[in-house]
Length: 215
Length: 215
DNA sequence: GTCTATATTCTGATAGAC
DNA sequence: GTCTATCAGAATATAGAC
Image (cartoon, rainbow over all chains, first blue to last red; front, side, top):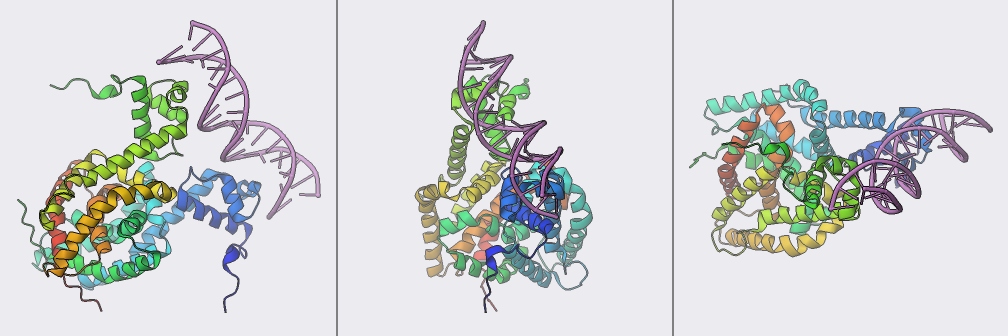
């Protein structure tokens, strides 16, 4: 029984939350400069003055959204990864699966983050050090142990990370161009992303067993 | 013998070219809305009025830059790929090598393109159809022939493209976060990108020989 | 808390002197 | 062709009534 929900998802929220949700949506989609305070007010279905009443300024509101987006983006990775002592191959499966689910729900986040990072590298620096580094260390340590044990071929941690993240995230940020070039509709796209949950770990595994015969 | 070049690379250019170069730099780095006409004038070392004198409006100037950027981005791929009848593995080496060289010279282009594509999908649609599709067709045809011949394992063209482009481009757009997470300096970064010229084709090859045993 | 009206600042574009 | 000064409109923020 489908009730009329979608008409305005903001209906049940407090005014403050309505503004925040409207701002989150627009800022994340378009970035700071493209979004006008009037757009946010219109999207939230409230008056322009209320934005300043609740959040003082456009800039403060944006900072709030940005911080929450960073947190969301980080949490997308960090769960379930650090503590457990399962083998790296299996761990990859979980990471990729979780992150593809996450990206399906929040497809605009990566580009938002990458743009912010370029124009504002310092803001996130501290967060990376405290939040991402531990995960990285854990994963990279496990990688290097496996290399030392001879289970996998030697690989630079940078390459490993770039491959893992690139294979997982890139289809989402390159989606418009990829879908047009390969001629794939939205349904097929999501089906392919589901496939990638299984395939990426397989591929990473293949990469980790490829002898690097440079020159 | 190093002459004092870098102080102002715009020095020898005509006023019109100075403005265009300044606009290219800023628009490509930050996007349309973030850049103010006054920023461009300052960067070019000229007066604000001259921007309108030469280019009529900010929008016209941006469109000019955008088109040139698209062309550059496309040309980065299209050369050398279509006509020749060399095997796909070898072709991949050339594509990846050329494109990494290209991205090293123009590291801001991918994010610029991806942002434009999201906010303005229609503009590029036609260009993709006329310019990228032929290359795609050629490469994908070759891929599917190899699959039919049993030379490589079956793979969705979408996955193949997403992997190829993702592995090549992503390190450049994710550079700020990757470098911080893995703790890699600029020199090392470029060294790693040189390595990837050889490694990515190797990895793609490994992927193309991985049996997809789903479920 | 919410609104309308208005003040203030920013930004793109032009007029007119040189 | 180049500059200074300025305008017109857009965009953010606030005052003040309800």
